[in-house]
Image 1 (spheres, rainbow, N blue to C red):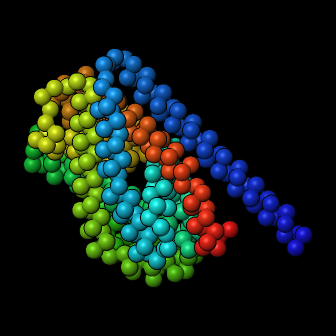
Image 2: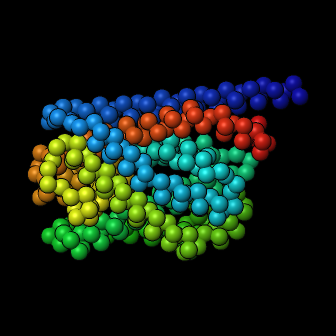
Image 3: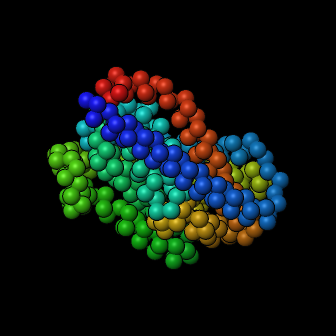
Length: 324
């Protein structure tokens, strides 16, 4: 018993240090991203309307909700007992990890926040990959469909969208995803993973595609709100929604799959190219940079709220489940 105490104390100490290092790493990455964006924006002075920026941030967070709900649905399908508020909390806070090089920190944060005696860490990690790849595949599909029907002159970007859709979407096809999980030997960590994956069918995937597709449209409105904050006139929220949606979805998917922290530069380059014919070079570039700042600040705000407001309730819930 006495020999066991030091090991427990050591484990707790190591966990605390690991969490602190993760926080430091995320803060450093966010600071760098925010500093670079503000520096770029400073080169293009703007008179902004704050209320429209608040609307843009709110629309972005709402647009992410279908992805969070889809992740929750995946966890339940895989036999994990988790509350929706726990899923939402881990999902939004996990977004801060994408600013750390390699994208792996997203998985680390989400799994670390949601694992318990009733939520397997390995199953949670698998679910994160499935949700994220589905989100990217839907975004690329939406962009490709819009470009093919409304902006046929953007042939190169259309081909890029199709390529990204295949790259992200093919691994999420349930039979292929199950084979990939087996190939990665996840069963060594959770022997029951193969049985749990049988519940992950085309119905769940289809539900995700439909709901996430709507979410991309809402995020497209976030770009429109940013343009409104800049005072760009003659923009329709509905008539030009396909342009906003294609710009945002393709930019975000390309930035994610580039593996560059936060998709820096890649996102701005894609979004600017699509928006230039509509608003001009300067406004398109400024909107792309401002959109990054608005989304980052929104993620930081909602993460802070969910982390500090939800801590007590979640700890009690986990204690009731016997995690201690």
